Image 1 (cartoon, each protein chain N blue to C red):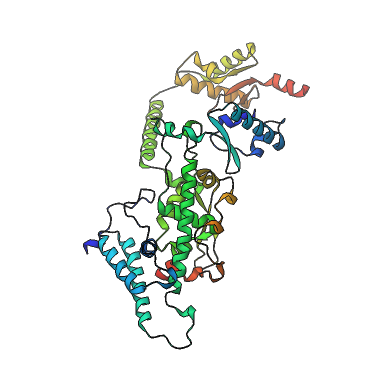
Image 2 (image 1 turned 90 degrees about the vertical axis):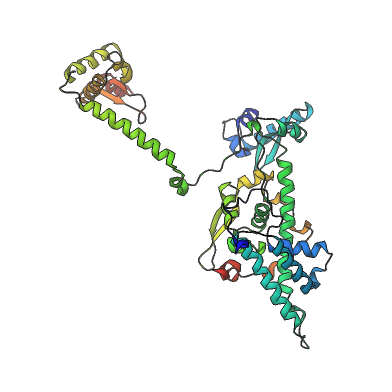
Length: 255
Length: 185
């Protein structure tokens, strides 16, 4: 059973092949072409013997690959057996038991040659370098995206969650309201008497504590509800702008 | 303007894509600009050229610099494809859309792993489903396939008639339902 032992890791199809042949058809073609055998008149007994000898020498092989070679060996033996039967009179050329194998060999050889030309094109193209040599990566398919989440990302997300929970807990420890929303509403209105608009971050920067930010935000929302100010944010987490409501309304009326 | 766009782009840009960059451009003026630039690059013996690949234009170095660039540390070597991958790709390129069973029938070996890797590298994609048993997935080549091999289009593939082994017309094409993989299943 040792010859059928599974390879420890899956073979990377892009690795340079250590095993010379890409499959049973490749091996068979090699035997035929190297001995200048007429592919339309394969000496099946000789080729079968050589094929079996070759796969015996190939040694350890993955189960799947071994199966592919053994299947071909079985096909060869079957053809050999059929060839031993005397031909009946009137039997046509198309009944040659080798015909299907020959068709497959030629078809495979056709594409093997095409692959050789592709390889040449690839080699020529690889001599030209694009700027920065950045290989254009294929666009990931949407359906595959969920699978691209690795454990690292899950772990990081869990850590972020923990930080956020810690922050939330910190907010919970604040007792009472150190800053009055009413005061902040006045601050916002005062700020807007000098400027037409003010950015939220700039507004709260002068206090610098979280509770001031929260109170100011609540104040802005309250003022917004009372149509004293208008709030504008182009996308989530972008800068929040506070506008004087009346002037905007006036501007809109003009327009 | 066209030169700036080609310089800044990682991927080939088609005339239509280039023309979209500015109102003053259309496909004809883009093509004229490309021809003009080509002339200048050739005349000045610049180290790079405009190559038409995968239906677009791309700035690429000239081949004579390959030996230097290949040796240079910070230039990653282009990852070449293995023999089985190239064989699978050639079947796909000529016969697309093609199912896995037909690839396995022609190569006489399992194709699942190779198809998956080719798909991951963006060289092939699922283009539909066949009519046969189990509605098998059909694969075709991508625009990136053309870029990888430096082809302008699929018409640039070596013509089947020019290959050393020419196949008879495919009137006796194997029924995909009766092919190797299905028989094993």
